[in-house]
Image (cartoon, rainbow, N blue to C red; front, side, top):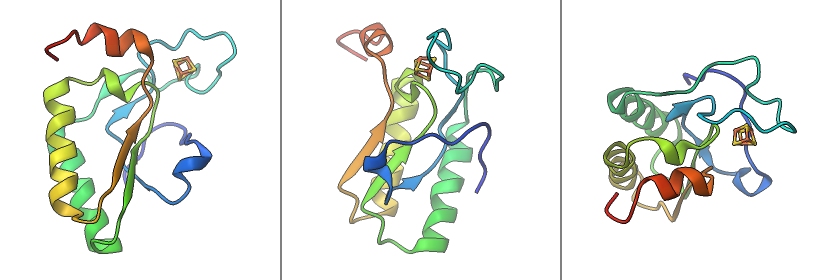
Length: 116
Ligand code: SF4
């Protein structure tokens, strides 16, 4: 598994497959949060790399995965087209998938606008 930075997931994702789609947090200014204060800086991983990690997870766990969490702060900030591609890929690789989750603050959701 390729992963950069601290892994932080909510208890509700205890049984989920964790695949990193973004690194760090694009905001990183909440005074109460130390998760990414020492880095790594925010960046979006390539769709190709993320798809490779999904394929690798299938090799390891089979197609039994039912919940998938893309960790790191505000993964919702990644380009919508990229997010759509990795979600569609995950759905085709794991036919029993029922839920995909990301962290996302309202600021980054609002930035996408109605079309995005
Ligand atoms: S948006 Fe989330 S991850 Fe980013 S600094 Fe704030 S609490 Fe931490």
